Image 1 (spheres, helix red, strand yellow):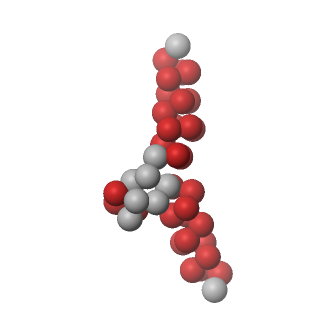
Image 2 (tube, helix red, strand yellow):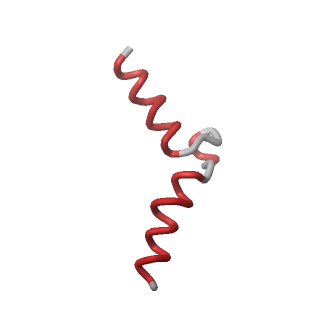
Length: 40
């Protein structure tokens, strides 16, 4: 049960949640912005 809760929080919730420290972007959106800037 604990593993299922951990997986839900880490894999589903945190990836979909918008973070104020990332200018209200999801972690995936933020990482894509960083990667785009490094390529350009």
